[in-house]
Image 1 (cartoon, rainbow, N blue to C red):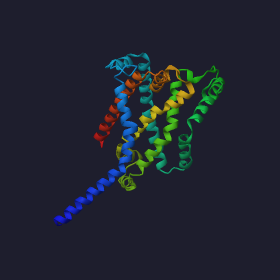
Image 2: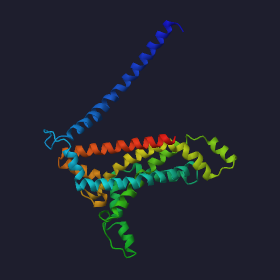
Image 3: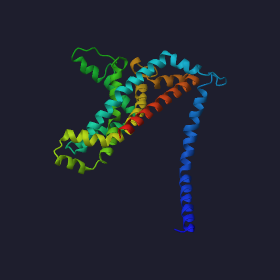
Image 4: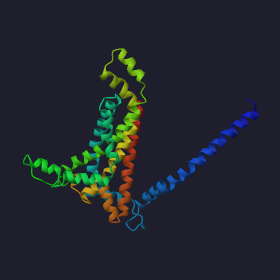
Length: 291
């Protein structure tokens, strides 16, 4: 290749790079304006007092961390995510593996699991009211066995109901992700393993799981993020101050916003952002180490 051809090739590469940046520029501007700049402003406000005029240092963080409401909401949120995310990932993986094998009931099972994704939140709340209020189906059913009727969303069992709501709502979404990951595994590997005498158990643990491990980071991260969206159902069913077992960080932030406690809201948002970022980095390091 002559020097003239090399220069032409470099110019062509530069022009392609400029064209790519021009296409990306609108999205980058949108992310900057709608996400980066507002979050930087939140960090700034977390160091100011309630009026937003005076520098308060770390006082907002000390106030938030020492508050009983924040401690209760944090504990409930951690407990909720620690229960929901592993259960959801485990159940969705089992169902996805079952569907991938092409079992007979697979077609209608897909519809059953995907139906909650298409249901509006208001419809889910109406369903929960029909099932779990004092005059709901659950109270009527348990009344047969002599159990007193009660509003189950205002008891300690509300946590179990919220867990069930999260899993029921997001199971189909995770199943789709697992199915997409399962389709990337060549069937020839399974056929070769079965020729060598491997059974279903060996194929699952020695072929399926190692090939699904890279997808586990994405599915775990998305499941963790979706765990914070369950607040909508809890809020519409139980209001601003639900039973203490389902009083989550989202309830606390919503109440701070309603009270215009911007300084505490900003400090809490920064703390939650740091924790989420740390968790995602830990997950990424853990899964990268295993691949």
